[in-house]
Length: 293
Image (tube, rainbow, N blue to C red):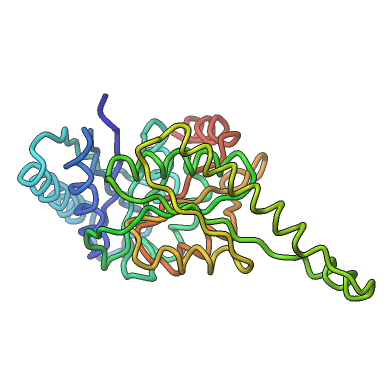
């Protein structure tokens, strides 16, 4: 069964990088692709009419579709011009997709300002953000993990990607000692540092064991470091093919919260970043998208 991908384009250099990423992906997996663009007619300058704007965006999509057909002829391609608020339209378009892919305007920039963070906080399927300077690499697939449900989904996604690409999977877990707890240790003159480190090592070992049990062909390397998770994962992903992270459960705040690690990675953008939503949020996010159609 083909993987359904929604690729959002805005005509910038980030869009071209994202399109190239999807074409490269289509060399190893069967893909059904929808190319979309969003026009917020309410924000158009008074001097520009929709009759001038819409044909230009339609042509951009047709050019992108032609590029896909030339380079990946097996891909099923559809195009769609959507009208409305970009955030809601992008979330609606991805409600039934396997992947939503967007590009950035620059290597450390965004699709439209901070929109990439808002999309990542509300999307109901894995989101791939491709930096403008992306080119194919032979690096590993990096996944940041913690002891939660989203980490299981992120690890499973990353392991499948490593298996598809024939790459090493780097499973990274970072940990820190809470400041208040450290102050108590200083007062008591003792520190259970090693005990806490071993507890985190067990979390990492459990994730690695999960991968090896379900993806025996994948070579796994584990990394346990004390420090900021975002910095540790960013360093590990410097030469990676992609980095995968999960998000915390959002519950009633669905669409408003994004985990700090994912947030920071979307600023540093060491390589394409995949953000996997929490499983408990998926039904709620899909329902919200349906209500807003």
